[in-house]
Image (cartoon, rainbow, N blue to C red; front, side, top):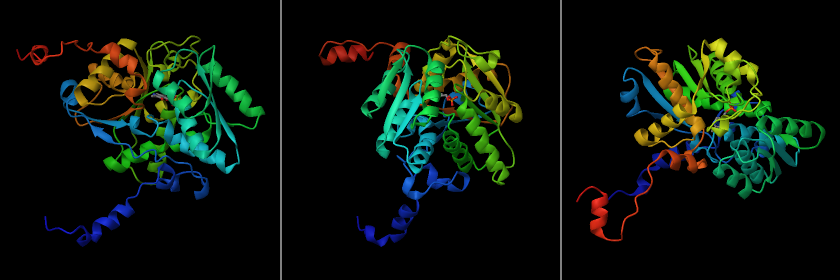
Length: 369
Ligand SMILES: *Cc1c(COP(=O)(O)O)cnc(C)c1O
């Protein structure tokens, strides 16, 4: 061997300099002030921007496709970026408890960050329509989990009323600190690409994320860090597409439970992001969502939630009508990890093969005999 690790002090220094401390410290100059002593972080953010290796060739070799894989946040979704801000802010204000309504990931994130802060958390979720992984997270982090006999929109309006009258901090994305934290995903993308993409594609549920991304891009633009802005392309599930239909959907339904929302809290802001950027918001069928979900897993090794896969389903849909031109750079947010919702993965996949316990049978099953 002969190399003495002690002979390379440079390496040690750079490790110290690169120590990652979460989105608040990394992007402090663009965020509302929070005292160091109030920061609650589980080192969210800093998620990979993964270039498509195989799907580009299949879908359209003339465009560049990148996946911002937000499933690799501490609780498995982008919600952690906003939650570090919302919970830190609640700590700085002396709150002892937080409350949220959730289709799943907000409750997973809120309960984890509340646990780290030593706060109590209360979550309201729609009965029966939440993925098992997300429910398990809220429970294991010690939240008081209430299954409301209604949908997300009902749960959110009850939550808002309680937060108004009682001493519990509301950490849904109507809390402006959530969106402040979430906008850091745009910063990371630009810092990585060195420019804004031509298109940013993402799911739209309560519409907080499209609002936050657009805010992030605009702030980087105002700060002179990028010369152009991306067009924001948002997608809703066909059975839960209030913005596309331009009216509230009373009984939203879709396999993509994270975006099963009929009356988005940030509706007008999402419309503004769409129009100011020259983008669009369209809808996708559950069938096409699941096709994109399976394609991503089988061709890129990326396992995301059905709601996340709508970004890719949206790209496929637009590409099919000749939307993109040569050289276009598209960034797709994959909002949450596939392990949140393993039931859907099993449903779209082949069943495991049952094989007798001997080598020959295994070789036969492998097609080698
Ligand atoms: C919350 C969530 C969304 C929707 O984001 P909005 O900000 O509500 O539009 C999409 N996908 C996943 C996995 C989510 O957790």
